[in-house]
Length: 276
Image (tube, rainbow, N blue to C red):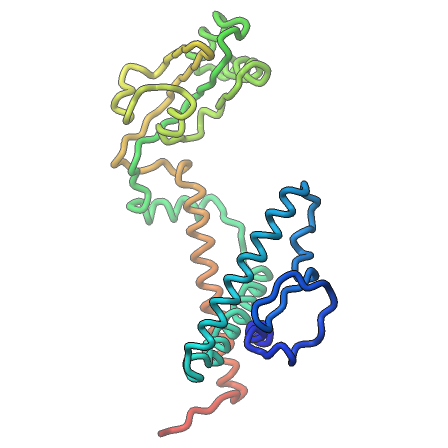
């Protein structure tokens, strides 16, 4: 790793001779056609290939010019980055080791009891900044069939009616959500259904609504609304909770790894601290 990072500072004559055609040069630093072969892993149109190569060469030239200008204007001490490179290398290796241990040992199963406990113990984290709603909504083309039947079905909360409507939407809707348990932010729904409401308070008395324009009929049946400033339902916060629990487990496992390594060092006398 360090050798690769430092290779730019090695004199050209110290590098092994490379095979290939020279395509660019900045003073004694050379770019060969073999250096850009990785750009052509996928077959591209000729114009795209020419543009990509030109952009790469221009970037390489600019980088080399800037690097060489920096080398010529810095002192030996200023150019010496061995300490920083070593620290960076150490951090990369430690990161890879900890990642490997996490993959091997981190329990990624989160049960319902853990989710509920986390939600109840951290409810202040789940205060809504925007209102949310749940219900069914969909949009149909202006000439969609059997609209009168749809108008009767979409206001229903009967499971059989919703199943029939779901089957209809599969074959006829440009977009539909029939999962009445899933929560959405109002603006997410408004991007699909032109509801003309800035917040959920504007939906009072509009829980069932059909809106039409020159292209589409839009239907929405709102089952429940949660206003901004109230607590998000557990189902809405579920993914956030799982992420938080796993993040906590990850940190705890990393902390354990580091303590175990230190304790092993103490037990096996891998290190010694000398008094000043």
